[in-house]
Length: 356
Ligand code: 9MR
Image (tube, rainbow, N blue to C red; front, side):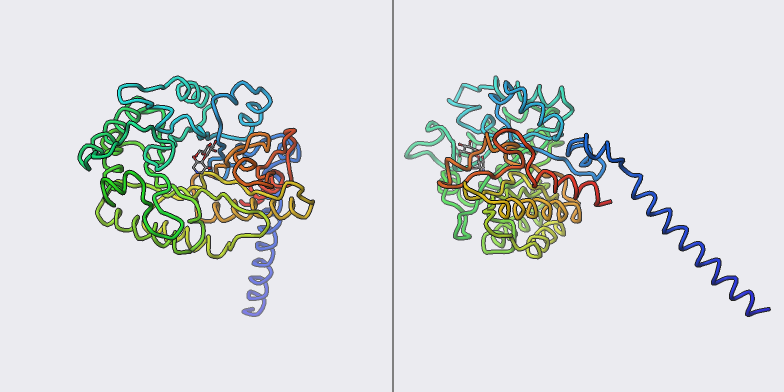
């Protein structure tokens, strides 16, 4: 009798396991039908997976209907490429220019998109009036505070994510000698975050940089700075990893994942903020496939570490900073200059569809 019972138990278990497996298979198959996969853009699948899909955009590009169509279909997050930068939004001490940022904020609102304030404190694109020979640390701290306070207050409740400090670390892994660092000292970073929190306690505050993607001297320095800020309870919520990559080779995915994990362990959000993968201008199919793999692997890592946003530095190769900064390079984005989706677009969709 015992034997029969035992056999019955084994049989029933087997039946249960097999039926679950079949159910699971059926579920996977049914999650999206082929029409959905073909017709929906990246943001649809991003929403299902809990990650924002974003692009850099300029106010001028809002006039390009075709481009706007691509953005609306694929993105639920935008980063104005230059409009929030100090020289544009606050060109002289008493003058703020919110015209272009207002248009982009309105566009984001109309289309249910998040929008990033890029950026409050940076070494580049600053107007000359900010500092002159003899400007003291206290004066410059006040200038920074007034700027942060006015810009963030103006957009309170409309712009939630801010790159409070951008590119604070030099390529040699030391703090960059910007006007902020030279006049105020290293504590300018802490000051900036405190001012931002004071201006809008509900905003999400990020430190953003390039070449900090994997574990290297620059990301080690950033880690040290951020760990210190967290220990001192300075209000910082996340790290923006820019990811301006050279697509002739693949990055070290293992190191990128480990790097993300260590920042996550500090309790911080992870975002990819400016991804592009540049190729030699006369790129081949092999290059395009490698580029697609890079985009796809990065998306996989972001989904694994539960990063909150995957933002690309543009959507189409027609509008990209790459050709003017890297001579002989281009093709860095997921749509070509004629707005055709490239293998990288397909790969991102595939990863988002499959990674349940
Ligand atoms: O894409 C931006 C380009 O249009 C500007 O001329 C340039 C000026 O510095 O900034 C570019 O964006 C940068 C971003 O603000 C910060 N990270 C690096 C980006 C590419 O240079």
